[in-house]
Length: 324
Image (cartoon, rainbow, N blue to C red; front, side, top):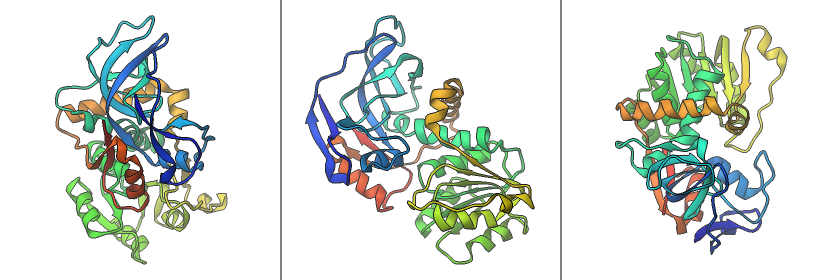
């Protein structure tokens, strides 16, 4: 079968299309014929060798995919062969991949493969950032950084669905700001403007945002603390800028503020039931027409390197998906 492999870490050029052996499902596993693969910042970091865990090579990148059940391993009786499913898999950038049977979720009719592949990582992340990490309460104000990105487009919508008060989305240009507004953001702010912190405060009657979802890192993260409300929660789930923010505990004391970390990988290993519940809820929202999945660009498997370059250069909006 065809697969995108890396034999060493580095830039997009290390990604090579190779023919490798088709995997066989073991006990408790399902073999999926892949139709669409979601690309995440974690994929880029693994390729570069900068991810939170060591990248072991050679390897096939990717861990979220949609497709059909091709075969069932020993002890697995469902879902039936041929069922359209979405799941976390091992080596998604390939024609076939293995998934644990208990992580495979059937795709409802309104959802196509590309849309389904856009939901697991970024959808679950957006849902858990708001509900499990920040404990969003109705009426609270929410600031979503990178509101036109894969997580951001979903977080804006999910915040409104949960009854948030003022939802503020940030982005770097007018096109992305307009998308945030279309998805329900009450206020859209260009974070490249020098007074963006003051704009957040004005939008929240001088109090600052009750909840901030932060994944830029560096100075943006440090400035975000300046527009966090008393008793507010800032959830850090990445550092897309490649720069680590510096915080001190004393900064949080006077306003009783909280900075929380979020990493989906840990939730998947330590609290898998919560992850499955989040994905089930997301699919229900979509099936009921309450949630839009924004797929900005699709690339064929052979152009995975081009897709990585586009994401790294901030040339994308919404989710980027590989099709097979």
